[in-house]
Image (cartoon, rainbow, N blue to C red; front, side, top):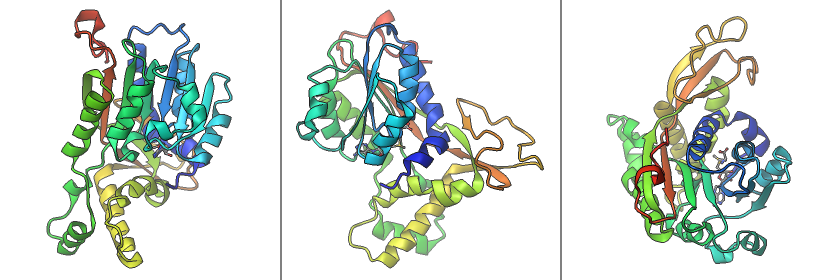
Length: 321
Ligand SMILES: C[S@@+](CC[C@H](N)C(=O)[O-])C[C@H]1O[C@@H](n2cnc3c(N)ncnc32)[C@H](O)[C@@H]1O
């Protein structure tokens, strides 16, 4: 995967609003923030989400795991806190094959909270990670909080465009959302043995400089979609498919264009609805004239390891919002 951690850490406006929502959900549980909690941040990237966790839970230890070495190096600089520890680890591997050092730190059932923001969609076998979660999450009080993205671009395919339809049908093995999300739920229920699984679908929005999003940032969702192009297609077909996928992603995600005025600011600046994150005026503008509001498709999943029946105050999802 080609994330540039130094850029991602300052331009991932789309992920930080939802990460904060997840942190707030944890705070609303009966969590004693003065306890030395162990929180594992799966797919921690450049450490932005880990930093939110370390600030929100001042006695906690955050263990951030990510498959990309550069991300982990960036996370270490981003969170120089002694309470944050970062390791390179491919989470799609079975737990027994994880680095020995991580296995020793995450000795059996030692994590109080497993957290993951905008990362699990990159793990294509939820059952393998489901088994790992079972091995590291503490029984009784363990909790799981994740935002998982699904990008349903097929709903915006122009059915009159026969060329586009034929290409997609022939070369794209795209997961359907029902299967994709239910695999996660069943992975967490049957493999991680989590209980009281609560699931919520929402569409957070964020604002980006238009040129930057269209030309650069879109490569991240594009990479996810390209994963489903069938193997062994020629470079030429791959390039044409990528162009189609990129256009569909933009068609699906871009909700409105927000022109900037002469001062590089928005005339109307009310982009801050429903936990939106937005670009600060003047940041990242590079002479750009427009910003765009983009919309994501997010499944939030919350669960706990105890199988005590969910009643009254013990109900994990009672106070989520
Ligand atoms: C969109 S970023 C999210 C980063 C961070 N959680 C945040 O909220 O900003 C997704 C992260 O998942 C990581 N990732 C993808 N596949 C992975 C895998 N198999 N194992 C571990 N991390 C993975 C990527 O390297 C990337 O840093």
